Amino acid sequence: MMKPEDCIFFQLSRVSRAGARFWQKKVAGFEVTSAQALALLFLFEQDQVTSKTIGEKTEFDSATLTGLLDRLERSGLVERRENPDDRRAIRICLTRKGGHTAQQIQSILEEENQAFLSTLTPEEGMVLRGLLKKL
Image 1 (cartoon, rainbow, N blue to C red):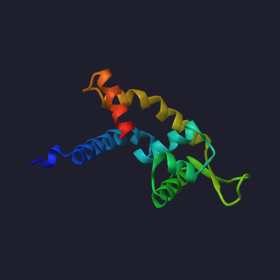
Image 2 (image 1 turned 45 degrees about the vertical axis):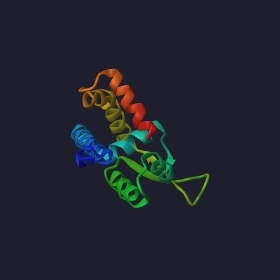
Image 3 (image 1 turned 180 degrees about the horizontal axis):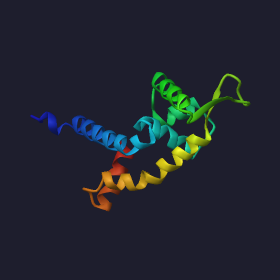
Image 4 (image 1 turned 45 degrees about the horizontal axis):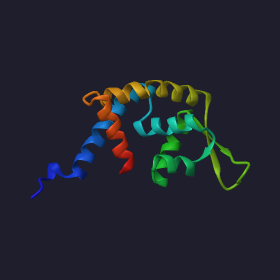
């Protein structure tokens, strides 16, 4: 009989929570949550997209994403603009402050990924990432 701690779902959940806590500590100095930091990184990669596009990339549900974008907007990191291609859709755009914050977060991303995976060899880290993408 399998022990609960050997269950893949428990193990993934445990590692996910550890990763979220680790990332939150790293981005706290930017006055954003870990989820907000990820949304900013996606916008830094491709700015002026619809909230639907951000939702697809982050896999946040609509209610979660709306609240997250509201908080980013109140913080002056993003703004909502009309979409000239579709008046029903709103584009989410980085502000100057948001772009600067996203750039700073981007600058620590690789180093912090390596720090989180420091107990693994570089090869093990690559295998893990490949397996996670496959799942």
